[in-house]
Length: 295
Image (cartoon, rainbow, N blue to C red; front, top):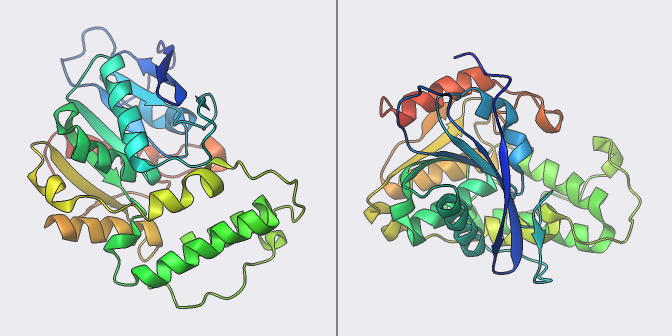
């Protein structure tokens, strides 16, 4: 389907406990058939990451938002970490403010962890959730090794700053297969073109605010199985063996389903946002099939 370049975007700010959230609404084109709101979420990736994908759904009202602490959404509570239950409550508030549910939800990466928690807490607000590659460590057979490796990344960030933290993070998320007991020391940031200097800040939204709470969150699997809405776990065709891909497979297994394969890798829906390009047109086509119940 051809994107509509002149599509109107309405932006609003929503005050919730501990944060002010900024969200965007792209109304469906006139004459479009009635359909639930389509919410696209990441974490810590903000609304800007869904610019290309949202434009490929001109017949749907698409809602995107910046998670608390990311880009336009600011924290007001001074907290240094955010938990998936807090993010889930934020998602519920955004859905209700944007017109109410039940909504269709595409959730990627940490956003998938948060949206699964939304289903646990407020299943009435969701019709179909497509949870794309949640980095959920508790469903992995090598959960202890993966947990230790993730904590090494967090510790490198706290000790040496963002360059070291990102170098460790990139190595971990690009590793394919079970995580070994010892990945070795964090790589030199220069290997990835990252600065080695420590600017002293420790407020990175991913490395500081969300990394441990997101990856180590354990969902109520029985509540997910019992939810009246549809929950689809999705993985990328090009990310097999990577940590988040394995998280999607493991969660699907826990729910007694098979993961649905989407084009591209972990960032398959991106169209140049944040310097990454996947296969957004093919991704959108696959998402339509899933939301229509064809897969």
